[in-house]
Image 1 (cartoon, rainbow, N blue to C red):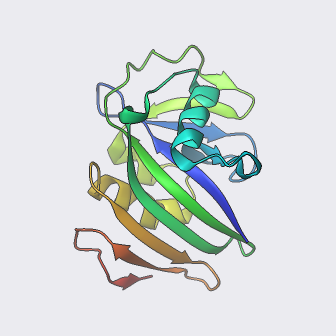
Image 2: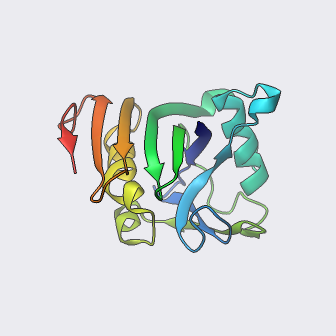
Length: 171
């Protein structure tokens, strides 16, 4: 079965993206956007999960209309074992870089990163090669992609999207 999660790409007034330098699994030691698993036993939807995760991880309260569903990504056999369905959200308004009441908490450290530097950060390879480029290309728009990690190198396909990556299989 799939693990279902959200990833939230929040930007500040300088255009930087907020990333979490993770202390916990999955991806301990790496950078990732704000996010987490849906509370499926409570029937939580993706938008509610995104709002909850943003508040839990940053202390910021966002309104539903301040988030845009940018993409849906499925990953088959991530790290050789886990299947993921991820809803990717982007903030629709810039945040003040000092708006969060904390920068460190049990899951890691929050850092504002220049968007051009993200692909050079320690991030999962699926984020580097697929998700981050698609998020950047589709800001304010929408895409759907599938990543197949059952073999290395992994492959991916963009099923919906309005850029040059769609609908070609890549790898």
